[in-house]
Image 1 (cartoon, rainbow, N blue to C red):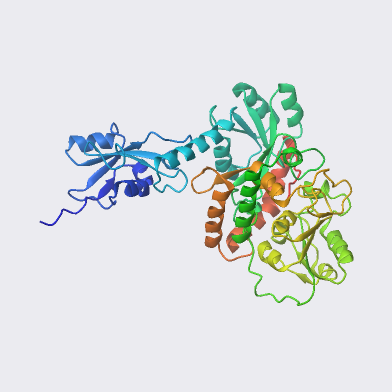
Image 2: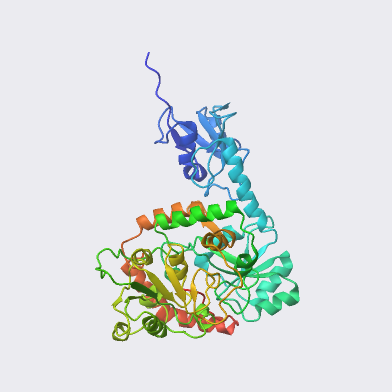
Length: 498
């Protein structure tokens, strides 16, 4: 006799539909259309669909959470373990329990699952006080809510000092403000109320696409001292770099992370076109000058002698008179979102070529040296083994790894490159898997960024023309009105690094 074919499954509710891939991998059965003999899959034995299947005598697969579940698990984000019973009997696994990777949802063994769940539980436990956010744009909130979730509950969102203090007192919370949108009196008010305050900003591996284009970020930094781009006060990153011991295993991890970032050709925003079509002069030293947004705090407060893109170009030309000088306008400036544009004729009077829209990684592959005020491009050049001269005081300057031209840049300590990477990319930021919507490691994020970049449209900004036009309208017409309304609430704008 021929064996009967395996039955197909049909979903009886939204939770089952969201978990179809995991259920198929665990059960070995496939979902299909309803037909006689098919098995109804229901979430929970006590659910209405499960009871209806039992009452009508139909076959049923009952699915529920298994014994290992992370604080971030749910129907939309998946479960680290599932328990399956088919017609009342355990299906597969040990007693019907199947273990899954919390991020990829692929089957794994119990020990590996327990290790991953424990890691997620530790990230959850770090938010031991209720998080009260201030000044977080709505499009940023889904990611921030995951990273701010803790034992005391979901984060609370506020937009004013008064609302933040009230919520902080009510919940015994800690206040986290987006660094460029913190109300002016917030720090003094938190100190008076006895509430801890920290500033939030994007991390150094962020997204595929610009924040100015409303592309959600997959990493943040939370700084309870200052913020890394403003040298007027010590930041948590500066203290980490100045005082950390950097054990060998951490340095080895940092080296592997750095090498992976370079091998995968990743950067903070991962935008820009291929530079392969451009011709490059043979036998000449090529110097890259990355432009910046001129009203950034990192430029205004961190570059005391050179504070504009034109002044940077002039300084770079004076220091490199015989070099082939490339000027790369900042993507936000080039897109028309932010100030800092140099008229083309003026730029070409100093630079040999303007390389707008070209990927920063492609450029760093081809140049010998970078001259910058405080741009993150300097850090991205350092991790690729290039020489870097800083005219300002970015976080990566002063540790003996760059040529530091600004007064007061020296930190009083020398770091190896991978010690700098350990502090800036492992110890300081927090990372989010933007697909699984769970905290993750920087190594895990590399996979997601590579996948997103491969799927992005081939453009200088990783967005389409219509989206670009919409953003131009937003920055030209809508944002001035929004800023005026914020100023009435005492919300200043001190732009962070771009």
